[in-house]
Amino acid sequence: MVFNSFTFLIFFVCVLTLHRLPLPWRVKKTNLLLASYLFYAAWNPPFVLLLWLSTLADWHAAKWIAAAGSRTARRLALLVSLLVNLGLLGFFKYGDFLIENFAALAELVGVAYQPLELDVILPVGISFYTFQTLSYSLDVYQGKAKPWNSFLDFALYVTFFPQLVAGPIVRAVEFLPQCVASRTASTREFGWGLNLLLIGLFEKIVVADGLLAPVVDTVYGAATVSSSSAWIGTFAFAGQIFCDFSGYSTCAIGVAMCLGFGLPDNFRYPYAAIGFSDFWRRWHISLSTWLRDYLYIALGGNRRGAIRTHINLMLTMLIGGLWHGASWTFVIWGGLHGLYLVAERLLKKSIVGNWRIWRTFLGRLVLAVITFLLVCVAWAFFRAESLSQGLAMVELMVIPDLSPIYVETAGLKPIGKWEAFVTLATLVCILSVHWALRDSTLEAAVSSMPSFLWAVIDAAMLTAIIMMPGEDRAFIYFQF
Image (cartoon, rainbow, N blue to C red; front, side):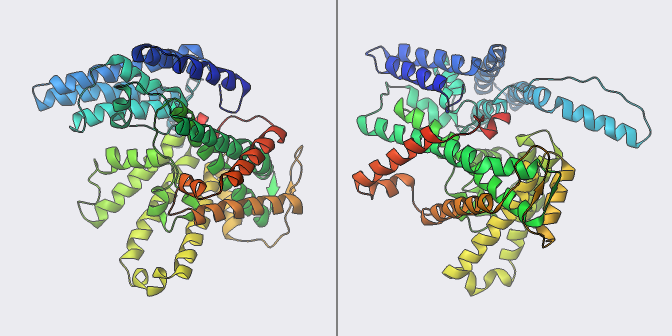
């Protein structure tokens, strides 16, 4: 069940109706929990068992950690949580990847090894909910939280349907206190929640799927492309993945708000970032802060000298890349961002980093453009179907061939001037919005508008959603 479907519309109306009835708060929470299980079971009912396993494992692990009388016992209890969550993630997401690479390594040393194909189905959203429930055990272990006293609340925290399958990754300390007292959205909250749902659907259906996805599919499905088409296809993907993923997060926050719950922001106009530290403070914030708090800092952070800091950054970003998928293209994507962060730290400490021009508007704009272009180079690996395709795309982007825009492929419409214009115009609009709002919020921008103007914009977005033809696509991050 996806937000951009009539099935979800019916489901959401039913959930809202039940939630606004004058029922006891415990009954309302039970209804939300059952609705969340139904929402997840719409993909593959047996995988609900994995949700139950993660829920039970971390609920009891946190209790054991808090009750443990020694440091060894606390570590053993945490180990149970780590083994269950990372074990599930490792088997379902990385089992085939590990076996394939072991077989390739054996072949390199002359050992003939024919592994069994696991052919495991990847449970939707497993990367998100395992990190979410694992953060609860880690917070209890680190003394940042105490074990919660209501299993119903904790089960709802793990499975809350708006953000269950693609985030934001919510911390227990953010969500569980909201379960104490009855929550129903005020008229203002309900209206803004519906607005966020509309904005998220517009980002997904109109911009990501309607305007940009066909160009991306054409370029990355082609047998031969030029440098210019490689850049256009990658620019299109940069816009597509932002609008797709930000669209889901915006929908999730809006749906939760309609139910009276608050979820954290996951994006803060990342394509207006000035530098890569700034980019990761704005892109997929719930994952970047998770990696910072539970991995980078645990490795030592920046407390053990420059060399160790650079190693920690690289390890964190490599693991962050692998979190996205069992493929070397994701590892390279994460590695590139690790290199970007290391290079940025080195440049900031050099003479170049102290130039006065970087504090001017023009200098900041130049840095933002450089940041965006290098992010796009990394996106080429993220989107590529194989390592060889990613390398070929980046080679075309870095070493221009001066050929005109063209794509040679069977069964796909070639990219022409109109497609290139639409892609670049859409990207310019996205970048302009990001730059205009980089130090503000969408809510602040909307509140400063005349109400009639925002009503016109809402009507235009709704009309575009209804009229937009094209293929129905799942959200990109469902595969992670």
